[in-house]
Image (cartoon, rainbow, N blue to C red; front, top):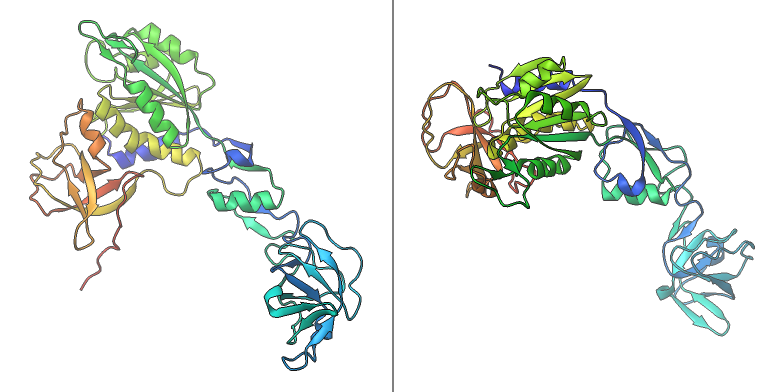
Length: 415
């Protein structure tokens, strides 16, 4: 039986090539750049005033003191967005607003709070050195400068910068299109009242939400009955998807026919069963160059399978540097009674204890079919396959969900 790490390595190795597309800037948030971006122009593109004040020639203020101020006649006003093309005449000044274009000939701006305006002109009481309160061309970004390297995840800060430079489309790794097919004769739509022996299909909307949260585009393929030909037919109609996920039908029961459907279609099986509890009966295959991952039908187990096996693949296709959940080390709040065999991924509430270490509360229900306890969990406590019972206080590996609001201490070095 494969370990999670081995299964992930195999899935990523057989994943389809990343797609690159140019998207509008407003749709690029959170995506990863596929190419380097360079500045098409300088920012600011003109000498810009950093203050409300008066633009001057520095040389005209060289002899100004508190006792003997220099008086410069006022030659006009420059609001932001209304540049003055005429050169500033020697011995004069113009009022200028923050962001306004410093006129030719001027090389400094003195703050309006530091002058006194009189009928004769503007009284200046000190020497204003060159470039005071003036942002030169390219102070922020120079034309041709490397802005962002390929592999950078675009944040709101970068949206602002790129918009300021007129970059309105960016090359990014495309969001994977993920087809989701739930299987099972017992399933009815969430809006329907279940009949005898039936349950609502929570896996389709649940897995779709996981895909969307991970950065992918979910494509719901509906529900297929536990019939080989029906499942195969639905999968054949999913040509627009980069990755296919099924839920249910991957165990050893008489009506668990997802693997059989894949075999009928000529898919290459990569694995069946992974050392994950809950979620051991998970399978993967390659169908027409696309990965098909069959998740457990038990809702909580399907979520665990997704977090451990599908999330790293989506991260890879999106070009992210970290694949999968953030790993750390935590301390068990409760003992774990376990026989050696399969690696357990216990739902846990991770929090920082008084000493700053991550503590792990695993007291919630852990059965594969129990969904309600997932709302209390923000992490998985990883209990190794070879481990037996573990007492309270045992240090274990922890996988943190994206919403786990915990501080991760640095690993402790040898004393």
